[in-house]
Image (cartoon, rainbow, N blue to C red):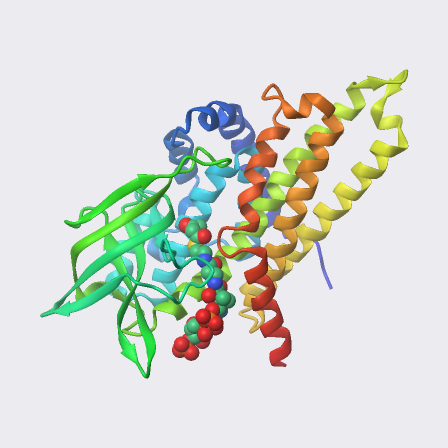
Amino acid sequence: MNLELTEEQEMVRNSVREFAENEIAPLAREYDEEEKFPRKQLEGLAELGLLGMIIPEEYGGTGFDSVSYSIALEEIARADASVAVIVGVTNSVCCYPILSFGTEDQKQQFLVPLAKGDELGAFCLSEPHAGSDATNLKTSAVKDGADYIINGTKSWVTNGGEAQTHIVMAVTGDSGGKKEVTAFIVEEDRDGLSVSSVEHKLGQRASKTTELSFEDVRIPEENVLGGIGNGMKVAFNSLDNGRIGIGSLAVGIAQAAFDEAKEYSKDRVAFGRPIAEHQAIQFKLADMATEIEAARLLTLQAASMKDSDHKKTGVYASMAKLYASEMANTVCADAIQIHGGNGYSRHYNVEKYYRDARITTIYEGTSEIQKIVIARGILKN
Ligand code: CAA
């Protein structure tokens, strides 16, 4: 068993870290406070090929393996989780389903501009009354000649109002009493598609999250992705990939919080010596470092399984997302604790990491949902 990264994967870590430390981290606080969409940072990431990093070069991407993808997202999140979630969503739940389920024409038309970073993608599954219960959709797509007419509301859309291409799950019929769900590729400029509200969030505030309204949005049947009735397969297969991304993002936030807590503990003096020399702080730092490493290894394992097309990838993706996101919440809380009162102030970054970490146990499936996926997977065989 070899746990070493390859030379190429090390290069990815170094080059993304350099860009993230110089071009993303210094702007993170300002963009968070002002809820400003990080266009400039995304342009730089597009130039590095990171908006289509898991897409083969023949479709305009960089052709990274999933391990490199995980490493890159971790490094971006270490600088700013808002930027990381934008990059994660466009890659894993928009580009990736088009690559996996799209026709050659769809790949040329939609995937190439996304993978080149000229465009951004979004994923529209959740609805006001269908979050964890994702198959309980109300958004409908009704056949009208050679078109489909989509009506409904999608919520919690990361990159909503910024994306040019959306993967939209809608009910196209009923099959044996079960909703038949189909995935569609919907362009931003379709008549009837609008942003109905923008969320103002606790954390990851530079990423844009919206509700989208579909009112008689006419879509040609060529935009059906993966065939009629395969919508949940498209959605859950994409989420298997997306959850590796969120696990990596959570590791990145935790690493940032740990790094700052460690440095702070070396500087801050209490009872006549740096607090890092007190065992209470040392034990906390030891626990934090161990938990981060465990989460990173589990996430990289899920990514490596994805690269070898392992049939249990989905279960491991859920384990990685569950463990890393819960860990990030604990580590960020401990980082604040080590900072004492200063940790609660906006003069220090740890309060931002704490806020940014909170959503990781919720989006792309709550911790409770991950446990359902894991339990089903381990009970199957
Ligand atoms: N890959 C491919 N297909 C899959 C699959 C997978 N990993 N998992 C399930 N499917 C298929 C099933 O085979 C089934 O197909 P058939 O109907 O043909 O049999 C279909 O998908 C439905 O699956 P289930 O019957 O297992 O569905 P369920 O109703 O029992 O739900 C669940 C299971 C695990 C609870 C699921 O609903 C779930 O994961 N919920 C959470 C959804 C979620 O993560 N939402 C986040 C949205 S994205 C977001 O957060 C916003 C953003 O922009 C980041």
